[in-house]
Length: 164
Image (cartoon, rainbow, N blue to C red):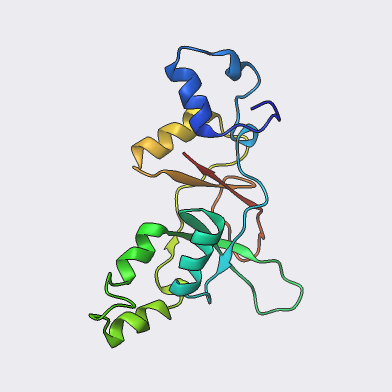
């Protein structure tokens, strides 16, 4: 934590150990959020998402959509979790019990399984409020949108993720 970058789990450990020193400089989501988040699009496939999760050591992928008009910025649509992906595929893929439907599942587009309009917060949200949202909704990741509202095609909001 010497580099000034904090993870939520580090904050929780500090709290559990009875330390509050770290909270003197960290109050808002922007103080701990992950920046420069890699994303996929609605057109990417389940197979692509599996590779992406493995390569980037993540369990959640923000999904972006690109407007058809040239020069438009991509916008945030929702989240695909590792759990969402595993629900789509069979444990028999690549094995003797592999069926044709298993291979088709790998080629399914993320637009069909994305969780749209997930709970989100803004960079200015206080950390206890973010934790409450996560606990109350039984989620372990929350997108951080530039203005705290669900992104719409005409807004082109920036996104960050805050995993626990």
